[in-house]
Amino acid sequence: MSANLAELLGTMILVLLGDGVVANVVLKQTKGNNAGWIVITAGWGFAVAVAVYCVAAVSGAHLNPAVTIGLATIGKFEWALVPGYIAAQMVGAFLGGILVWLAYLPHWPVTESTGDKLAVFSTGPAIRHTAGNLICEAIGTAMLVLGVLAILSPANLVPNSGFDKGLAPALVGLLVGAIGLSLGGPTGYAINPARDLGPRLAHFILPIPGKGSSDWSYAWIPVVGPIIGGIAGALVYKALW
Image 1 (spheres, rainbow, N blue to C red):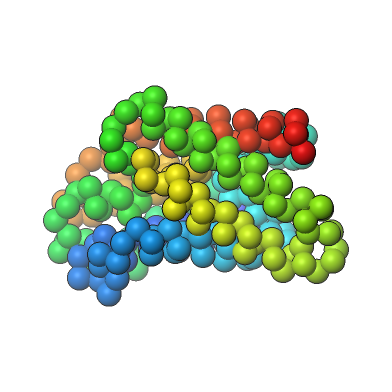
Image 2: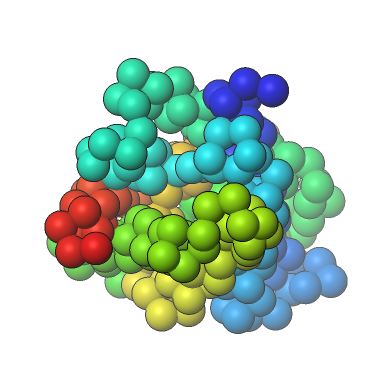
């Protein structure tokens, strides 16, 4: 498996399980309908951990353009590899969105809310406030990239000890769960341009009954905010750790 294919498959798994838990909670007549925010944040944390376990040995499991760009900014990843990684992440996220649509096929017609249908695929603000939403996404992603770099540093997980491979994905999932619980309320914590834009494109294209708008006027915020935050988080790590 190539690194780019690993990023595609890993991001697809991430979105399949992450958007899948949202579908289970918000779509009507599912077994998990109305299970609540705790289930969604737990499901996303588990989704990240599983995806990272699947492909970390091949590609490093960035699964997120903001992580890829942040690492490249501080010299921990080659800029020449960035376009291929981001393209793979975008395709994987798009395919993950399609798989979620297929998995919940009978539940789209019985769900009346267009907002709930869009929420399965992409994020949206609790209160629409451009500056506030952008800042929230930047802070959340800065915490993600800073946390990944600090938590998985050799000071905590000694390279080639066995613990680095065994525990690192679980700790990344724990970090994402913490971000969702603490910082996810304002915007739904995209913290990943591919995770939001890829499935949003799937929502736009797929024949979902009564799906409504894909909210393209908001779509730039979960792309630009995480990129700003990813670079900032990486630079803070490089400066202080």
